[in-house]
Image (cartoon, rainbow, N blue to C red; front, side, top):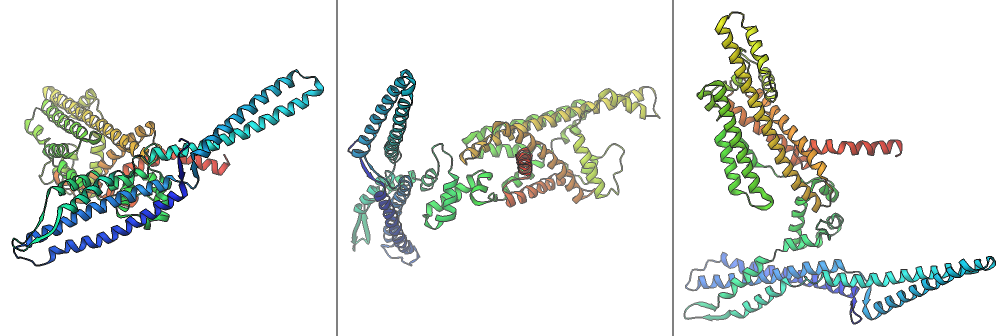
Length: 553
């Protein structure tokens, strides 16, 4: 601020309000005019000049769109400026001299206070009270002048802040409005009755379209709802929802809807009282079923994710890591089966899900178990046991010794072969368990990546999410996903029964887990794993809060 600066905030605030009303009204009229020109395509017109006529109307639509975009820019910027302003008059010729005067008076009074203090300290006992009173009087006046100084300094800083924050306003509309004006000049109003065409220079249109594409009104609206740290101001969003929704322009309504979806669920609760329900992830269901087919399905989905991922937040890199994980896991399972079983056919069978009737029951049943007339409940029970034990390691020597002990009818070399076969089976199971744990660790790493992205979402939503919570949520979510997978497979086995092939059970299991998560997301905006991790992470805080309320601190 300099002494020649002058800003009547109240008056400028009224001007902003008037400008918003005028631009909004103009856009309403332009929108009606735009509909008229657009309706030209509904007219049956097949004469010589029909295409020229349609093109002429289309050109007016482009110009109207440009002017409306420029108006929307100015509406958004006027609203931003309006929100910056208070009602004080900021006059540099008053503020700066008053600030200097207050500072000088403060310094003078503090100097006098110091003098009085020295006199008090050296004065006889009967004069100390007088000088002490003088000291405190000067000190009190200095504090009053300091407050006055801070008041004038605050007004100066308010002016400087408005000047800084408003520098980027009202620029986007200028080039668009200029291009639209030039376009109107180029758009001829002359009509040739000989050739049935409207004459115009088509070069203006590209310039307008490029300018309009550079301006995202939705992004401009989002930015004005953020604070200095780049986080959305939840109080502003809540005020808009409760008091000003009917005042929003079309781009602002779109921006507000997008912001609500971008917010962290906890921030959504603060603004609208609940988490925004998520859309059903149909693509996720299709990909899950495809992956359940076997190695080919997993690789196909991974390649598709790489091809369709953008580089924002490293999504393509994450998709690449998932492909590497699936390739390594598949190869490790295939190689270990071949090495420990010596059966290439069995090893190849690990690459895809069997479509053979009853193959699921065969897979989950122990050697020698009954495979006929097995109830649905028994199928589910065996499935739970098989999947749970797939994460456990066996003692190889103990497995061989138990096999020999149970082979009562064998002797000699045959008995030794039984022991060796049991040891190889145990080694194969241990290798597969290791692969399972490696997969769980990889899933944990991917959950960490997702939760760090959620941490950034929380940051821009004004919600605190510490690194410790990121790790804790990732551990819990990984565990819950494992439990859901085991439970989903068991439920699919129960639904399909003993004759179900592995392929069908895998597909139905994916569908069961997807349906449960989708219902949860539509209801509360979180899937089951997120709900569980949030509940467990928030439990200690809830206990402390409850204890404080009950026991008074």
